[in-house]
Length: 156
Image (cartoon, rainbow, N blue to C red; front, side):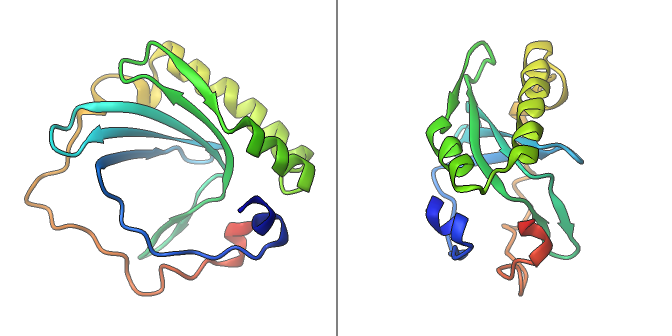
């Protein structure tokens, strides 16, 4: 997968999310997003996940695009502990030139901001955000036509 990313030969694939509910918080202009994985049956938080990525781009009528930078912070449900994930993949992307010095500096700065939010219980880590659930009467969303086409600017 990493060599495909470096060679710009990767492709999107269809995948249906199952097993958990995922509540995602994308912060405008930020180099990470915060996700709360919940038990699909009970809504109980299972873990938090901070995904380091390029700032999202809005795609009107479709959603958002971003580019995962392969470094993650996994946080316990009660926010009391965390560990880093995928350091090896991140280092490989650095060696392959996918993550250049500029991107690396952005990620390093974002790591500090994410940890500060976690430690101070601010942003997505504040209050009861982890127990939010959608109205059960809402229909299951579907991707609109054309959502699988990635615009060039999402990759840069």
